[in-house]
Amino acid sequence: MKKGTTKFNYYFNFIKNSPHFSGLSNKIIEEILPEFSIENWKKGDSPFNSELTKNKFYLITKGRVKVFQINSANGKEYIIEILASGNIFDIICLLDSQEHHVFTEALDDIEALSVPMKLAKEWINKHPEFNKTLLPYLGNQMRFFEENATDLALLNTWSRTIKLFVKDVNTNLHPSQLKLINNLSHTDLANLIGSARNVLNRHLQKLKEDKVIEVERNHIEIKNIEALLNKFKNS
Image 1: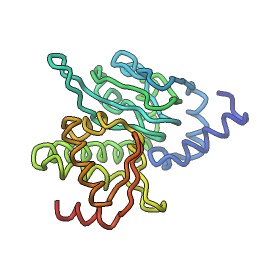
Image 2: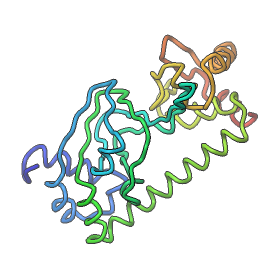
Image 3: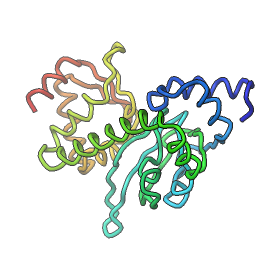
Image 4: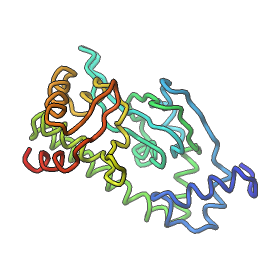
């Protein structure tokens, strides 16, 4: 990526405004940005595999990626997380240099900036400022996974469904809308809460009857955010 071009300026601003890199000086961003390559995948593709991410560090700039695991014995799927623009993949490989065995699927057309993992490690050693951005990101990821594990162990599927919507809702929009999971299939929503589709459908039907949500195909709209939050408090 050549410095001074429109493309360079666009991605410079993207990195500068990313919460994971905002602590870097303009000089450092100008130094590292030419090393990045732009990669694209179509919706439905598997953008990142374990061998690839052992050797490359990615910053997603467009679209959403589903990260999941599958039980090979019964085909059951569990969605670990949904990554979106601004998210990093794969922070685990950056830390331990080992393959991270997960499956991925592009939920939209995907664009990402990539750089060799070896070079990303060199930047961390060369620029201590990286630790100020990557360590908080790692901490947030650890909290996220701990909370998910706790929810699976301690909350019933109704409570997990309500919490899924509350965590994803954008209350700045009217009517309130879901951000990352708005158009996911009911199967994917069920896999996010570690349950079966028929169980999730019962919960969605209950929320519809209570006029909390409106469902049309895969589109879910929050009709009564106050009622949703109240159910969350009492779940």
